[in-house]
Image (tube, rainbow, N blue to C red; front, side, top):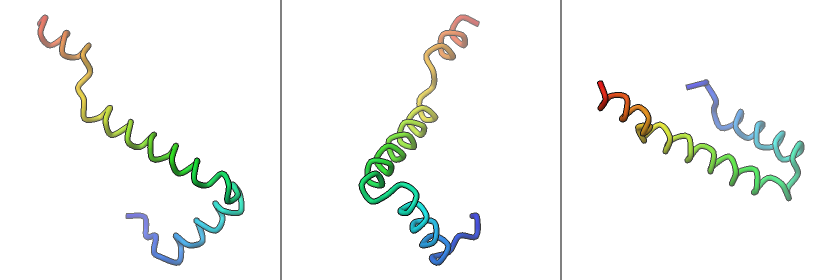
Length: 57
């Protein structure tokens, strides 16, 4: 995808650990996971406004 292998991922994780610290890293991961989950859920659901516009036409 982006050409990230194991060594590159380890460097990214070490930098994240240094920047955010070990106490903030779990909460950061949790919030990132919830954001991705919400984004996927929003893509999967068709907005109700779109349904109303299609039905009225």
